[in-house]
View (cartoon, helix red, strand yellow):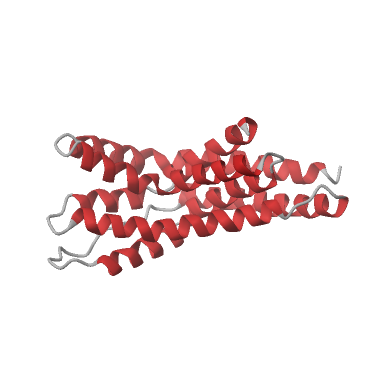
Length: 218
């Protein structure tokens, strides 16, 4: 379990760093005066749906890979394809501009279902984090460890997937007075440096998967 955890933690950390737009949106909403906590809790539920869904997909793919010769061939092909995709997408991230994610205007009404839908849509279209979380879950599914250990690691993946939402939310709930300057500094760091860190993680893990896949044919 420890070796698998060490393998997926860099991916999970990159998932967090791949969500600066989501973090910025959460900070903006928490700073509003119209039901901020209720809206972010609804947003979190929508994000949880995405996180659980992509975790299950990655786990099922990884878990379906057996130790037989044909399954090893299938795993190698999947690793090569995923490795190439991560490298290409990582380069795209480096030269792309961060999307601006912000609410259009202040609303007085409580919009539970609207913010649930926003949470679902924003996380589904956050491809950086989706690909990384999917890859981490695939590694868990393919790992030769106990079933309980796999479930624990999958929960770790989901925890990191929702961390850009839960961390500012709980910081605001526990330390309401000191949270604003702390969140502002975190947001500034994410906007400035996250692209380069995520790019590095995509390239490193993409090269690793590509090497692991090609090694089968050498």
